[in-house]
Length: 140
Image (tube, rainbow, N blue to C red):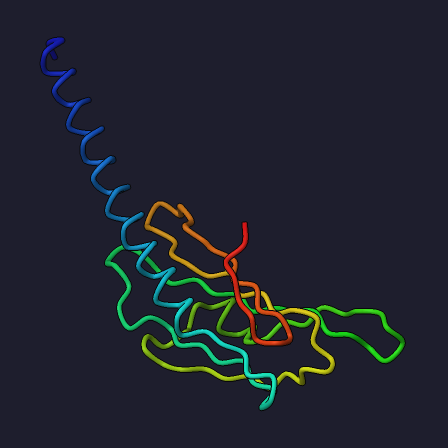
C-alpha cells in the first residue's frame, strides 16, 4: 500500500472516531440532562423517584447504580444499595418511572451514578447527589 493510501485510511479512521465521539458526547449530555430533570427526592413522602430515558442512542446502553448513606440510631452511617438487580443486569425499562421509599430522618445522601456506555465500553457517567432536603446536584 502506498503512503498516500495509508494516509487516506488513517485520516478516515480518525474522522470516523471523532464523529462517533462527538455523537456519543452529544447524546451523553442529553441523557445527563433528561435524567437529572426527572430524578427527585421528596422528604415529606420519603420517596426517591426517577425516570429512565425513553431513548438511548444505538450502540449504547443506559447505566444506573443507585446507592446512598443512612444514619443508624447511634449516629454512625451505613451504605445502602437500591435496585441491585437492575443495576447489575441492566434491565432498566426505557421510559419507566421507578420509586423507592427512604425516610428523610435516616437519610444522609443518595447517589445516582448514571449515563451511557458505548459499544467500545467507553463510559460517559455522571453522579447525581441528592440530600435529605431534596436538593440535587451533579458532582465530579
